[in-house]
Amino acid sequence: MTLEEKERNGNFKLSWMSSRLIPILILLTTLMLTYYNYDNSYCIKEDTTDLAAAIRDYIPNQKVKAEVNLIQSEDNWMYVIFSDSQYGECFMGMVLLKRGWNGKYVIRSAEYGSGPPIRLTVKPDNKSQVIIYGSIKDRRAVRYEYAKSIQDIYYEVMYKGNIDQETFFQVQENKDFWWTGFRLFDAQGMDITDSYLSKQFKNAPAGSVNSAEIFMIDIKCLIILFLGIGLAVGMRNRRRSTKS
Image 1 (cartoon, rainbow, N blue to C red):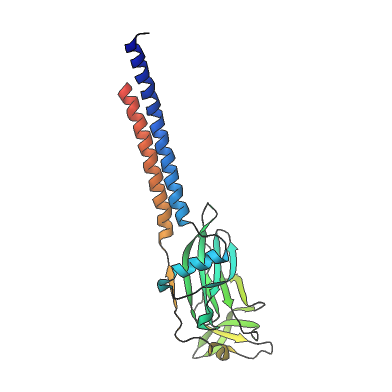
Image 2 (tube, rainbow, N blue to C red; image 1 turned 120 degrees about the horizontal axis):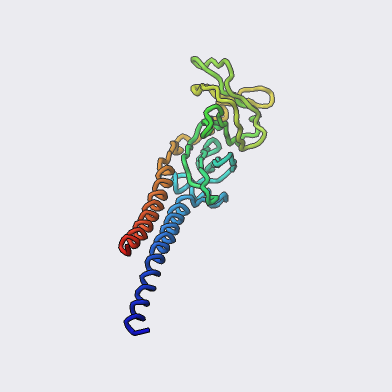
């Protein structure tokens, strides 16, 4: 074999390798970037320390030093009930997190403040059910009620339940009625609502936060994936057309 033939053969092998290696490297880089972006967003572990830190970072101005009281998982969702002792017994909040395919979570929404120690929220992906959650430090409280009210007269109890532990999480049928009056009772059936609410910290922060970026996280990862695949396939097809 002449030197010219050897050189031509070497160039052919180099061209053959580059036409296959470059698209493969692009695909590998694309997969790594996609995973990095996804794992960097869905990054919260089911751990009380990790969750408390994530909640503090998520709430505006970081005024709340969250202490995780209860973690409840439902399908691909996780509910975290938290409190902050610096704002008295009546301060409480709940954070909703969504699980990713990497087994970790991202925060979807949070609500917090001083007021009724038991609250209601619609269950995600299931409008027929409502979640009732609470954190009550008063040992006298054994039962709660949410009832329709007109001028402070309560009637037709819509939601009710027993308080078996300090922090709890219940799922009930959604009765499609939210403007309700809250009452709290002791073991003798005495109404202790006003007594309990008098302990609330008047200047405690309150509010709700919602994230619209969960959908955008998935879209961003898909865009990276499709661009990378498109570039790799385009380069491969260009090589083939050049040869022909």
